[in-house]
Length: 122
Image (cartoon, rainbow, N blue to C red; front, top):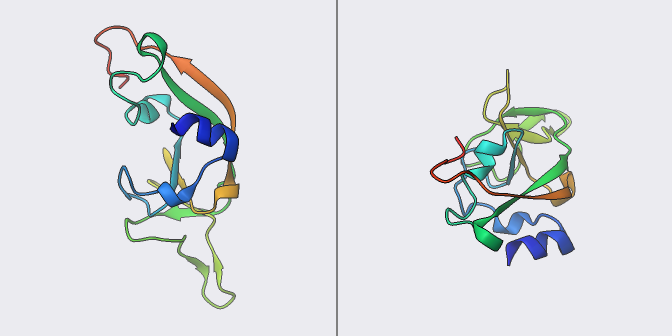
């Protein structure tokens, strides 16, 4: 399913919103693998219960705090019509980034992992 599609075609924002829209209808990324693990199949979908995550290059540009109703980033400059490039959970120290254009993120590596028995990755 999803992993082969991302490997062939990249990230696709048309699937956005399946796990919520905290920062807008976008594709979400985090520098913290434990956060990303929360969205993996709980049983592990790979061989021997393994999970996968993508190490990706994400162009975040100028960002601001996002909101669930954003379908594109908020305005940066009303006069010029320029928008922010992405939204984040906290402007001072972002942990989650949301991008609104598919070209803003490219998967670089596919990492396969297993957590120790009883570990929840948090």
